[in-house]
Length: 184
Image (cartoon, rainbow, N blue to C red; front, side):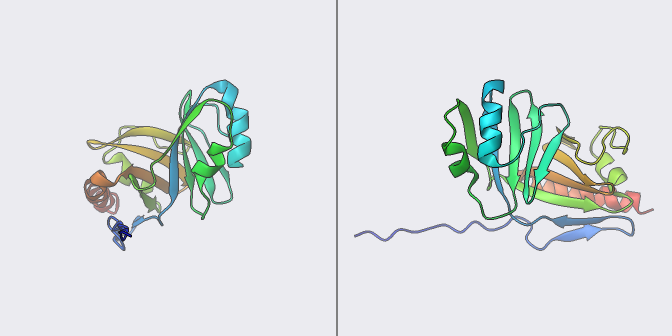
């Protein structure tokens, strides 16, 4: 019988921290993620299976315990679970037509917090991140420098930046530059 080898993925930027006097930048704990696509008639059944109400309006998100669902488009969500549950198993029980793809190892999350968090992210993102325009719970797929990111405001002074692991060094470096500028 053949021995099976299992690869252990190295965490990108593991233990890396940065920031300035007004902002903290750190890598978020690993999480399970799915890219979810579904038409409107499947949303209710998927919401029940995932135990979170999938948001239906632009720039919105929903959170239930350690699970978040981020609206990315009329039929698209990024579902993030920071616990131990299997999101694909939950979706497998849904009879409505949908697509659920595990993207857990594709993404890395970076947390940016502090009074300079908005200015730090605006160093590479043209979006208005003021609290009035981008309140707590707001999310969007946007650009940061030359990288596509998913941005969610998790508190008045805290953002979660989801990026592809291949862009993590670049995004983190640009955030550090923004933090230095925001700290001055």
